[in-house]
Length: 135
Image 1 (cartoon, rainbow, N blue to C red):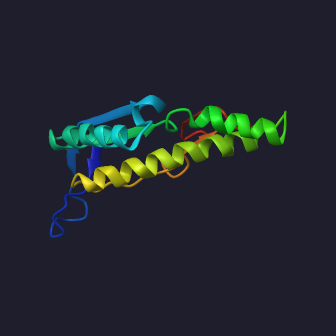
Image 2: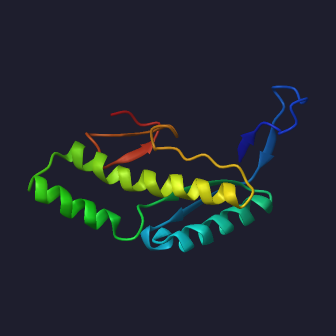
């Protein structure tokens, strides 16, 4: 369950609404094109409107990760793990932002977050994340 503040601004600040928490994960092929991003947005909005609090995790669009890896190796055959993580993360940020825009277009407010903004941090220099962990 997730606890959310009611939208009614007259409600007491301590008032909470319990909603079932639904976590959805979409891989790169699911968000590979603008049409597919919009399709995912419609599924997310439908789940929200059925009474769920929805958290969505998205991968980079289509072959973005492959292309970024190829580019990185053109620059440096052995890039540092940290910089490679930063580069690949950029693809995920793009997908999350585009999906938030598509959800908003469907009539529901949405905000994209990076892993760190959502309370996740990486361990051992990157490539391994979990909620609340510290580097």
